[in-house]
Length: 214
Image: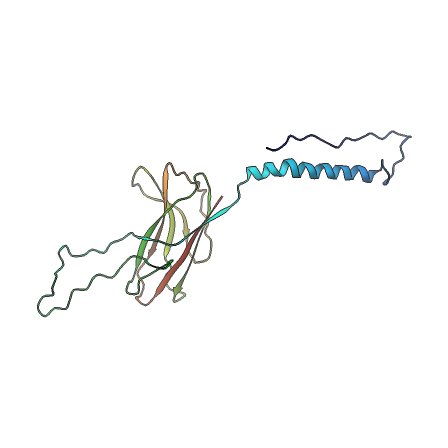
C-alpha cells in the first residue's frame, strides 16, 4: 500500500531587519533549498513514482513457435484408382499446400508452389496489442513474401474475421492501425499465414511469431 503523503518541510519566515540574508549557515538559503530538494525527492520516491508505476502497464512479449495448421485443401478425386490403367503412369498425389514443421521451424515443402496455414493465439484478457514481429528467411531474398495477418473473430459465429495487424517484412515490427484490446469473452484470435504461388525452387522459412502487448 502506498503511504499517505505527510509534508516534512516547514518554512520559517525571515524577519525584516532582524535576519541577515545569507547563503550559508543554519538559516541560510542553501540549507532551506536543500531541505526542499529532500522533500521533493521523498515525495517522488515514496508516493508519486509508485502511483505512476501502478497506473502504467509494462510491455510484455509472447514468442511463439510457428505451428501452423493447414487452412486449405487440394481437391482430390472422390475415388482415386488403386492401380494405373494399362499404359498409364502411377497416379501422383497433389502437391502439398500446408506449411511443413521441421523441428521448431515452419517452411514451404520443397515440392510445393504455395503454402497456407492458421494458428490459434491466446493472449491475456484486457491487454492492448502493440505490434507483431515475424522472423524468417526467403530465397531468393527478393522472392515472394508470405501474407501474415493477426486476426480476431467473434466466438459466437463465423462472421468475417477482423484484421488487427499485417506484417510485410521479416524482422520488422508492424503496429495495428487502430487500438486493439483483447477481449477473450467476445473474440478468438488467430494468425493466418498464406504464401501465394511461387516457383518450386523458392524456399520460405518461418522462425518465430512475436506479439508485443501492454
